[in-house]
Structures are given as structure tokens and as C-alpha cells.
Image (cartoon, rainbow, N blue to C red; front, top):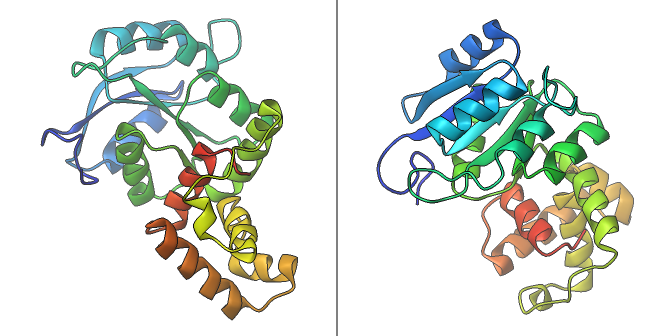
Length: 229
């Protein structure tokens, strides 16, 4: 499946939920022809209604919204639990917010969102994030991914059992993998592990090759799915 459709050649169908009409207009203007906006809503109640009627692939969701119980985007995600697309897939939620506060991120993810990006994201990266969430990936900006993984790992109270894929990595590669997946930059990993940046680059290349991944975004999703961080 490529990054420009949902597997059938059609456009990714999106509902925009934000209480600022001008912001919704701005987002629509930045989206390309691979995305079709099928609905908009400014508050919790209107959002739940339009999502259930439009049954989009992805809901682009602000976390602070009027209405509901005061939980904003979390109320919307909870209110639409079980809603499916026309193809029978679950409607997926991508939070898009000015806030990068831990409590906001954790609340909306616990309510079922598949990702969280801030409003500083570039149009190109936003389009990519929408398609990836539609395909079932978890998408977070690198800095936010770290404390999401920390929070859910602590809640689970355990680290996933080492599987066959993880066995391919050396102890040092596992250390580098965890830090990169948490959003650390190469120089930060080097400082943390007392190794050179060049060594970090070598380890990252080896990790991606052994796990058959192509980017740090895929590595974050891989690590999250196994609760390794």
C-alpha cells in the first residue's frame, strides 16, 4: 500500500474537528488531492454526529473543544468508539493540537487516537501522517513519542517479552534503538551512551537493516507495538 491512498485507489476521507473555522480552512487549503475532506465540526457534539454520518478514514482532531464532558478530543474519540468506515475498518483519530502537554497527549491516546502531532507540523508531514494513520500506523512527533511510550509502559507494568526480531539486535543496538525511538537526536544518543555520533549512525543503520525498517518513524511504531520503551 502506498502513502497516497487507502488501498483501493480512492482518496483518504477526512473529517476536520477544530473550534476555529479559520484554522480548518487553512488546513483544507494545505491538503493535496490525495485527501478528501468529507466533514467539519467545531465542538464535541457536532463532531460525534458528523463522524458517525460521514464514516471517514481519519478524523483530524483538536484536543481542546467545547461541549461534552469537558475532555475535548477525548470525548469525541470515546463518543465514536466502534464507528467504522464504509469499508468496515475502524475510524481512526489523529490529534492535531497546539498543545504538547503530556496530560493532553495521554488523555486523547487513551481514548483511542492513533497519533498526536502539533500544529507546527509542515503540510507535507501532516499529509503523510494522515495517510499513515489511515493505514493503521501510530504517528507521533518524535518528542511526544517518548513520554507516550513511557506512560503506557508504566501503565502496563511490564516490558514485552523479547521476540525473534529483538534477538537480532546486540545489547548496544537495543540501547540505541530505544533512545532513537523515544525521539533523541543522534548527538543526544551519543552523549547519553558515551559514544561517537558516527558510532550512533552505524548502530542505527544496523538496527533498521536487521528489523527491515526504513525510518525512525517506523522504528518508533515498531518499538511501541512491543512496549519496549
